[in-house]
Amino acid sequence: MQKLKFILSGGGTGGHIYPAIAIANELKERFPDCEILFVGAKDKMEMQKVPQAGYPIKGLWISGIQRRLTLDNSLFPFKLFDSLLKSRTIVKNFKPNVVIGTGGFASGPLLRVAGFAGIPTVIQEQNSYPGITNKWLSAKANKICVAYENLERFFPKNKIVMTGNPVRQDLIDIHGKNAEAREYFKLDADKKVLLILGGSLGSRRINQLIAKELVNFTSQNVQIIWQCGKFYIDEYQHFNEKENVQVVSFIDRMDLVYASADFIISRAGASSVSELCLVGKPVIFIPSPNVAEDHQTKNAKAIVDKNGALMVRESELDTKFTETFNNLLSDQDLQNSLSQNIKKLATPNATKDIVDEIIKLVESQKW
Image 1 (cartoon, rainbow, N blue to C red):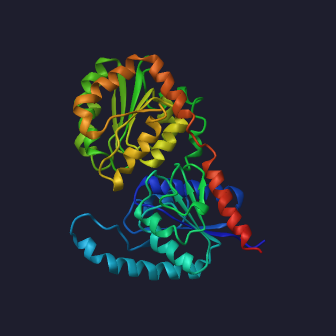
Image 2 (cartoon, helix red, strand yellow):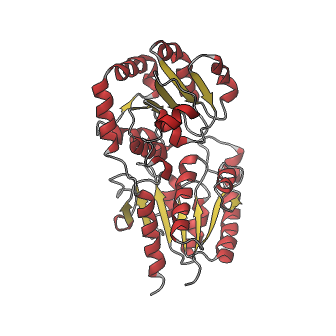
């Protein structure tokens, strides 16, 4: 059998990178001798995270269009043209069987070139409201794997496959790791643990909120693991001096931190939402309003509408957050209900289902 080759592209944020890595890992599991190449945007986090996961990556000179007039906007046509040319060279030299895009700027020119070259392409759309790149690519894509219902208004219905979002496989069974997690993070077994997740880059508004609420949290015998993001660690790391507070820029052992948590405050990026469904802990979502089409609010609302989580909008933090958190902390029935309902929305087989669709495209090339 001829050695299979796959190109994956997705980046800019962890929400695009980690699904791509999960898909690559599943492909390697099924086809140990296959060749996998990643394509990302130069100077974005995928250029570090992908090699750390053990895969080669090539960078394109590409970025998104800003909402305001900037130098980057004026350079965009040149960046796009350069990226299309480089993508053409990459595809021609690597000769992939299938090209997979998980969103982000770099996937646009790469999948466009692959589609025009007659190479099967798969889009994996994580959000309840698709980004501009995936909408642009959908006409040429062979399959579009989605995590939310009612996306027919954005994509051709006959190409949509409901799979859910890929998640880290070490999250599938975290419930036996509680003792290890408490030891790893040096936690007091007699106190509840609140985990705060502001996304890979961090959230200024959430960090401001947590700094203001620390006295409320610790006065109720709650200990904190606070992921503030790399942009904010210098500003907030002094809170490590407080008892029962751990401030970190990034968390490597997500399986253990999820296992340790009793409550979670999180942004509502698509990958985070999918992970939290699998983890099954009580969650308060604080969606970012600063994303395209407010898609984080739509992601969170899809869970909240099924009684699987609570949500406080940024505009409501000063008036509603304290009461919402305190009610959750004191109401065991609410905690149990949220946990049970969010677990029902988990898609633990998403990565396998997406790779099944990729393999179907490989098989179709044999006829």
